[in-house]
Length: 145
Image (cartoon, rainbow, N blue to C red; front, side):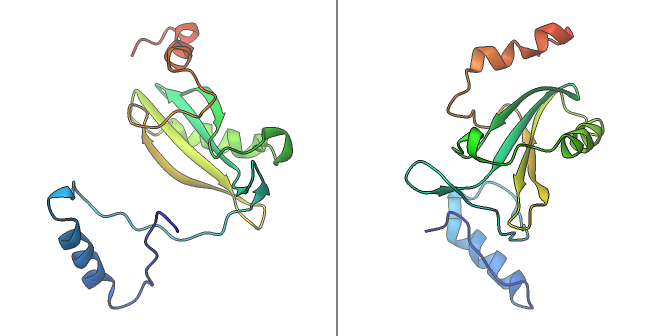
């Protein structure tokens, strides 16, 4: 099953959102986010198909690390195109946060989209990533978090 609830965007959406908040009760934190569903490309993976997602880590608007973010075999998927990377780096200059991530994914049409941007302090690490190495990425830039 999917971890996401897919609902049609129609006149019932406000009621569905209120029902969702009510059902969550005390477990509801704050806010409801609606995202457009986009079909992502699927590549053969370890026993199942996987998407081609990448997490970009930024410290003070500087890109410090890029990690595969969906268990994809990096050698078997399309690499993140340089022009997409440059566009995202330009966009990141507008984010006024000392430490954040931007997640990108390849769609089934071959286009690349931003899935989300988030606080780097709560973004999960990739399975191959070491926290202490990530935190020291800013050293060469003179960045102290």
